[in-house]
Image (tube, rainbow, N blue to C red):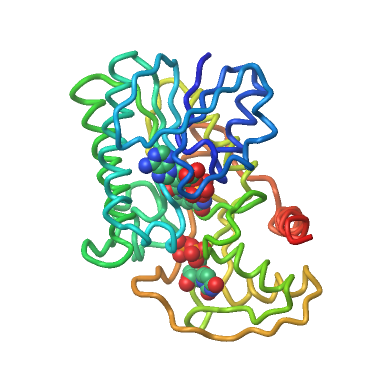
Length: 309
Ligand code: NAD
Ligand code: UDP
């Protein structure tokens, strides 16, 4: 099949391109290189089944493809808040353009949605039925509400035009090729630990996240795309929940660092608790993550330490 991956030069997108090529597909990677990089996919450029297009999805584009993974969108708070209006445009106009393409060429389209549609959740763990607790006017809203509208657009193109959609809500994912400068907790803590700098815990560190290794996530994305008669939404993430303070201590111990923990102000609207309920993914896709946090972190630490040499 010919498969389009928007945001294909980003962290998750580059791993997905790799996986789709190894499954024997032709892959078109489309990216505007806002947060992605050519380096992430440089090892794929010689593959005759791989094609790279520099393009911004807020502009229409005509392509003939069988499947679309719509991943284009900055994912870290630092990057999506850099130009919040652009973030909304990417989720809204970009998703309309990709849905228009899916409709025109009758392609199946998967939207990378997010646990952020649950906002600062009042239900724990989060199931797909939960409608969320999102601030519509806060500093995270450009991302959260953008992704919520993208979900709405997917459902309306499906109901109104019969577009074959798949909706996936991705929880915090980590691994090699995360951007060093994206300010996310995994990359920040590992880089700080490797450099012997202070580890910056925001707030008192009691807020929780559940971290999924990128290979597990990519398996889930592919399983969902390949599944007939189930459009989602489905949660994909690792239910192993940890507080941010515990996470800092774990990174210090895995890196053998002498860094110490310092506390910084908690950003506005920072969710207090997050853990996916993945019962549905298990039932419908037979999917569950298999990489333990310790193993995934060791790979990620090795990646960042290689880049610092
Ligand atoms: P990333 O920033 O590494 O990748 C996003 C890619 O999209 C980058 O290559 C960027 O250059 C590209 N891009 C951004 N705006 C674009 C535009 N207008 N046109 C074309 N390309 C554009 O982030 P990631 O972690 O790989 O996230 C990929 C997707 O998964 C995103 O949609 C994100 O919202 C979603 N997601 C990620 C996580 C996570 O923990 N990493 C969690 C939930 C959802
Ligand atoms: N965080 C932190 N120190 C950092 C970066 C992030 O304590 O240097 C916290 C952040 O406040 C949040 C959690 O770690 O509570 C996860 O942040 P990230 O930006 O990685 O993802 P998100 O908040 O979008 O889940």
